[in-house]
Image (cartoon, rainbow, N blue to C red; front, side, top):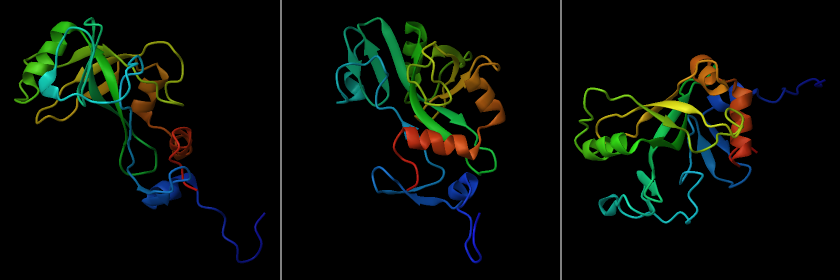
Length: 190
């Protein structure tokens, strides 16, 4: 109960809508919309030093800001998974990594600069970074990978509308869930 003259603390939606907050972990001022990014796919075990895209090779291991190859057998690209936050303008974006088949990886690399990915420019992949709260289990999440022109990172869509991630992308998440995601990654308001 609040006494006379005292205002209740702002709601999660009000905190996000305010557009700015000081981070409890890094003491940096953040603003909404706020995105998180994974520097590398979860299976990558060689640190986070990037090589230039121009040095891409398909044998062995390789990591740049846009491409990843593990053991010359697993091919991944950096992409963006967007989730609406109910009652707040602007979507939450999770910069993460998805697998592609070797064939589609080649198409993506070939069209990376030109934006020409061919007529079948919607590929299947698997999410290789976990997003706390929305995708906490260890089961792989099947995705649709939609490449975009002008070197924009591909958009990701859960293939199953019944998976918790598919529901979140279709129906949005609550501002409270968004704050919990920020808290899990160390970027919640003080």
